[in-house]
Length: 443
Ligand SMILES: Cc1cc2nc3c(=O)[nH]c(=O)nc-3n(C[C@H](O)[C@H](O)[C@H](O)COP(=O)(O)OP(=O)(O)OC[C@H]3O[C@@H](n4cnc5c(N)ncnc54)[C@H](O)[C@@H]3O)c2cc1C
Ligand SMILES: NC(=O)c1ccc[n+]([C@@H]2O[C@H](COP(=O)([O-])OP(=O)(O)OC[C@H]3O[C@@H](n4cnc5c(N)ncnc54)[C@H](O)[C@@H]3O)[C@@H](O)[C@H]2O)c1
Image 1 (cartoon, rainbow, N blue to C red):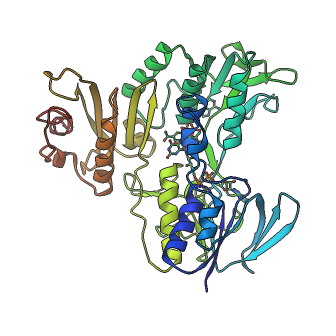
Image 2: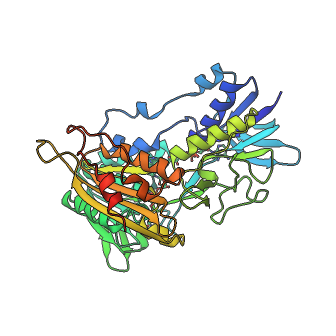
Image 3: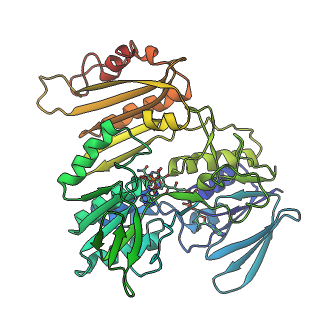
C-alpha cells in the first residue's frame, strides 16, 4: 500500500491529507512542528481587533478528525532532514526524541516564512511578526497593556493594513509604514488605494508611505523606530513586509522558482516525481499571466493540496490554475481583486488596457444604495480579461469578482461581457449592470 508522508499540516497539508484519506485506503503520516493545526490566520485581525468574541472558531479541524480517518498524526515534531534517495524523513519531537518515517510519496506543505527587515535592533522585545496563532496571542496580550500606546506596523500590504485596523480598534496610536507610496500596492491601482488610504487616515491611522525603517532603538524593548525621514516613539512593532516560501528541507534537491518556491507542474509534482509541493512553499500557474508564478494565499493552499492528494491516489487531476483572487474589508470599506492591476501587469510585461466605471449598485430610486467602483484590466491585443478590481461600502461586490476570476480562467474577452446576461432586480442592481457598462465602454 502506498505510504504518503505530509510535512506541514496547515491549510495545504490538511487539504492533501483529506484528499488522500477520503478517496483511498492509503497510509498517511502527517508531521507538524506546532501543537495546533488549521489556524485561520485570515481571522487574526478580527480576533485581536475584537470584532469576533473568541479565537476558537479560527481552528476548523483537529488531529482527532484525521486520526478517525486512519492517519498517523505527529504534532510538535519538527522535520529536520530528508533523505530523498532512501526516501526517509528524519524528525525530532519537542521531547527530543528522534523519529523516522519512510515514504513512497512525500508532500511538502511547509508554507512560508515572514520576511524580516534587515535593520539594526530587530532582536529587541516587542517586535513581532504576524503569522502564527502564538504571535496573534502575543499581540492580543500586548494590546491589553496600557503602556503599549504606540503601535508601528511595517508594511501596508494585506497583513499590515488589517493589523493597523485591529490596533486602532484597540485604541492604540497606529503608525503604518510602507516602502512604497501607498497601501496594498501589489493588488490594486492607486484609483482604489487612494480611497483606502483616506479611509485609514479618517480612522486616525498615521500613514508613513515611501518611508523605509532604518533602525529599531531601545534598551530591552523597542522604544523608537528610525526612518530616513524621522524618529518615532513606539511600544510595539508588527513587521508585515511579505512572505518567502519555506524551502529549507528540499532547496538543495528540487528545482526552485526565482523566489525559492518549489517549482511544480499542474499536478503539484516537483522535479522529483515522488515529491509533491503544495501551498505557500510551491509555485502556482497563473491563468492571467499564462505562466508559473508565486501567490501565497490560503485559497491557493487548499486547492493545491486537493490536487496533490488526488494525484497521489491515482486520479490524474490537473490544477485549473489560479487568479490570485483576494479581498480586504477595513472599517466597513470593501475591496476585492483578481488577476493583475494595471501597475502589477506592467511588472510582468503584460501589455494591458483598462476600463473604469463608478456607479451606484442599485437604481437611484432605491433608498439604500452604495457607490461601486470597478476596473476591468484586459490584454491590449487579445482583449482577454487579465484582472479586475472593485471597491464599495457594500460587500455585495464579492460575488462579482468571482465571476471575473472565472472569466480570466476561461480567457473571456472584455467584449464578451458587454451583453452578458446579468439579471436585474432593484434590490440588487441596475437594469444594465455596471459590469456590462464598463465592458461596453472598453476602448
Ligand atoms: C495574518 C494573516 C492573514 C492572512 N489572511 C489571508 C486571507 O484573508 N486570505 C487568504 O487567502 N490568505 C490569507 N493569508 C495567507 C494564508 O494564511 C497562507 O497562504 C496559508 O496559511 C498557506 O497555507 P500553507 O498550509 O501552505 O502554509 P502555512 O500556513 O505556512 O503552514 C505550513 C505549516 O508547516 C509547518 N512546518 C514548516 N516546516 C516544518 C517542518 N520542518 N517540520 C514540521 N512542520 C513544519 C508549519 O508549522 C506550518 O503549520 C494570511 C496570512 C496571515 C499570516
Ligand atoms: N485578505 C487577504 O487575502 C490576505 C490577508 C493577509 C495576508 N494575505 C497574504 O499573505 C501574504 C503575506 O502578506 P503581507 O501583508 O505580509 O504581504 P504583502 O505582499 O501583501 O505586503 C507587503 C508590503 O510590505 C511592503 N514592504 C516590503 N518591504 C518593505 C520594507 N522593507 N519596508 C516597508 N515596507 C515594505 C510592500 O510594499 C507591501 O506593501 C500575502 O501573500 C498576502 O496576499 C492575504
